Length: 298
Image 1 (cartoon, rainbow, N blue to C red):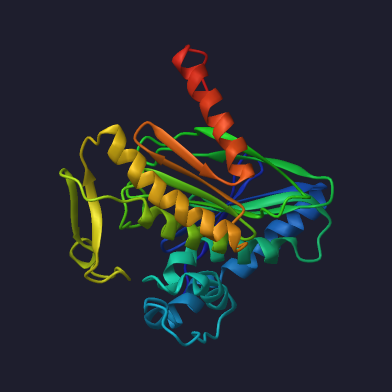
Image 2: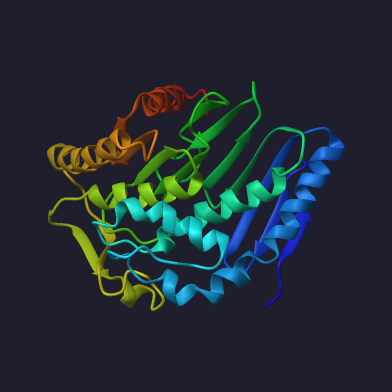
């Protein structure tokens, strides 16, 4: 299979595209080191989709009691990321976007002298930070409206190297009703899988919530005939709080196990967090909302 493309923007970012994968890559350092890093990322990316397609049938199968064995390094990373969630229905595809971001970033920074860098795969982002480096990452609290709701300040000393967001309004199907669940984790693959599972837990039975079999919306869905959310009507404050609490409790259990470093959950006009890092994110979200309410812009 062929068809991977690489282009450079005027702002220095690199755009990698192949089939359904669209990546934004940006590295920081000397011009020579950045150019070499971007070239390395591009060369590695050229074979990523081909490798995933070769194992796609197995990647779409739910994780069971036996640890799944894959040949490709990206597929193996997907398996590692979803394995801690195997008590619930999950397939390795829940971590595909994050795992691809992690792998392309690792290929780009390997052997290079860089200050920092990131690979953004549709909002699932992998980061590299050299000692002393910092990076501000945007956070979205509503996948339907889009735009940044706040920012999280990352530094090298933190265990966060991946951020991912999931919700029923996003590009992937969700069994829950969260507008957005943003997770900070040691890798983007871990964040991707955890965001999916936490978003599934933000749920409640209530009139006006519409669901449909996943396969009826996408014949290739790895969720098969499981019901996924297609519409959420107006919810009273109590119902929102109950749904969010379910998600927060699950996020706290993942936090206690070291799987994630924090999570921010949004539903309607309510936001909740798990972990100190996510609490700092919430502060920036609230500050941004206040500025918008007062006409100051984002």
